[in-house]
Structure formats: C-alpha cells, structure tokens
Amino acid sequence: MSQGKKLPLAMLAALLMHGCTNSPAPDTSHDLPLLRLSPASLGCVLSAQQRIVVATQGRAEQSAEVLLEVDAEAVRLALVALGQTVARLSWDGLTLNQQRAAWAPEPLSGERVLSELQMAGWPLQAVQQALPPGWTMSADTNVRELRQAGELRLRVHYEANRVWSLDNPKQGYRLTIHTLTHSAEPTQTAALPFGSACR
Image 1 (cartoon, rainbow, N blue to C red):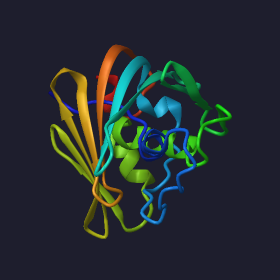
Image 2: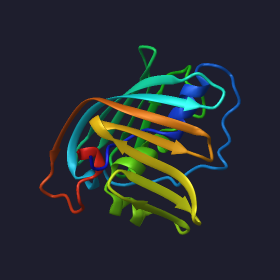
Image 3: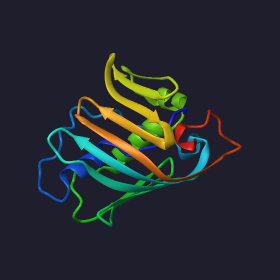
Image 4: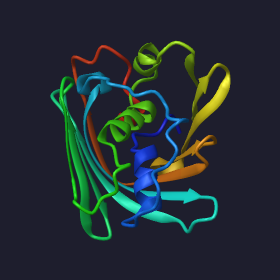
C-alpha cells in the first residue's frame, strides 16, 4: 500500500501519557519542527475517524479517538478520550484556534498536533519545502523518515488497511493509528500530488 495518513503526535502522546495527573511536562528539547501548511495543500476534502494507541517504555498503552475534517478552507480536529472531548482545534492557513478541557494537561499543544498531522499526512514535497535548515525528509512506498543533521528523528510506517505507526526515538514513544472511517474527494485545484491522508 502507498503512504498512509494524517496524525496527531507528540503532544497527543504527552496528553495520553500524563492523563489528568500533575506529572511534570515532557522534555521539549527534542521537539520536531512546527509546520504551518495550508489546508488546501493537502489536495483533497477529507473526513476521518481514527483510534490512536500510544506506547512508551514503562507505561501501559493508552488510546484516544481523533475526528478530523479538512477542506480548502480549514483543518478541524477533535480529540476524544474516555468518552470526553479533550481538545478541539481549527487552522485556516492563517490562524490557529484551539480549545481544550479545563482538566487537560498544559503540554497539550494544538500547534504540535497540527504540525505532526501535517508531517505524516500532507504531500511529501510540501513538507520538504517547509522544513527548516538542517532537517530533511525522505520517503519510499511505505515509509517516511525525518532527520536532523542526518540523525533519525521520526519514522512513519504506512501499513495495510490504513494502519500506520510513528516512532520517535528521541522522545521514546510509538503511535499506532487505526483509521475507523475515511472519506476523501480530490480537489481540482491541488497544486501538489495528493497527500497520504487522501488515500
């Protein structure tokens, strides 16, 4: 199968790992670049529901659901855990709006969720052009790899049946993303090849 789909990442992992506790915020010194790609550059109108499972050393696996909508005007995302909406965000290419439950931990960042969603799901060329100096992304049929000065920072593996895994060796976690429902229609004005989230 060709490349998979979108995803919320590091700060989602932080949310699931820290839950509603007062645990210290995760170390952000190994953060990945923040992307700000336009909604239209995805190349399709997308609606999807996903289940995300977070695995990290020394902790039990945690899961949440993500509801995602993308059109030419905006990206809209809702994160649901334990039957409650934890956070909502929207991005129109200029302004990022986010709301989160009062009990959600401080590390939950709409900026990080959006960026890592785009890192894995938007067209490869769009991602490559937006990376800061020193960062590169390469890909083959089923894998994307993000590197900083040659060091692997993120690997995205697109598996069959719209299942993907994302490994972050610096921050020590893996996300496995299962797509439960998916609907995508290509846009006629897409300037770049369809992103993996459109397939």
